[in-house]
Image (cartoon, rainbow over all chains, first blue to last red):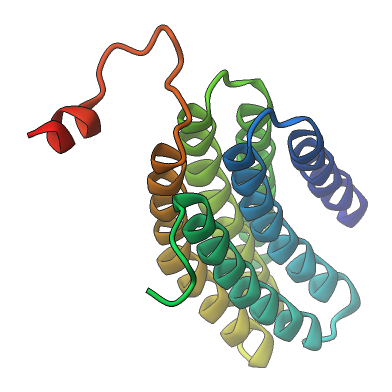
Length: 85
Length: 109
């Protein structure tokens, strides 16, 4: 059962990686990076469920925070503004 | 009974994730891709985290999973809004079969 969960989330990761590599413009890649971060949060939760250790959920929380900050920074960079206004 | 509910929530969540990522690959435009993938993947990951919280019982693990789900529910629409605004400002054109562009009409006035 857990193996099926791993396979489904790996399919999601590889579809996101296809869009990151192939995307014709920079916003496509930014969208794909955001989605990849959220999928990896789910992957950490499944790892914590499989191994019965709860520090994987700490990894998931930190990854969600860093993914959000990185996406906001990339969006401001796309908009053509500097990082401090 | 609790196991069945938890595994059903996780399976539905992973199906939503896969459909969102297929939308990310198959749609023709940045805005279509954003619209398809952000909502599906947000709902799918929240269902997956709630399923993990149901399966692991009351404790530190379920508390962390619920906190993570609430955080994703707050931050993912914010990030999608910022990406859409940035993509429009960086000059990405709409798909040629799109019929309405309310943002251009509003910013022209």
